[in-house]
Length: 105
View (cartoon, rainbow, N blue to C red):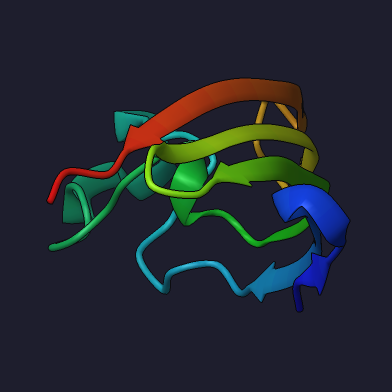
């Protein structure tokens, strides 16, 4: 959704919810003692990105279009990921991005 204003200004709010179940081969840790004589499972990974998690992103793009020249855009986002079993159970980030797109004819 983009809100347009006089003078080429615009605002684009955005919101994202994400939910992921853990991969069936995700393990919090992989240790030989856990599996005993049977050895390791055929497929296993302790990569935290395969854990069950929920993510939210809330942000806004604000910009101005310069007719015949380009577009200046500023993006601000807050991102939060919460993992179920990972050692690093939460990731938080703020994103500030400034860009300029030049239009060529």
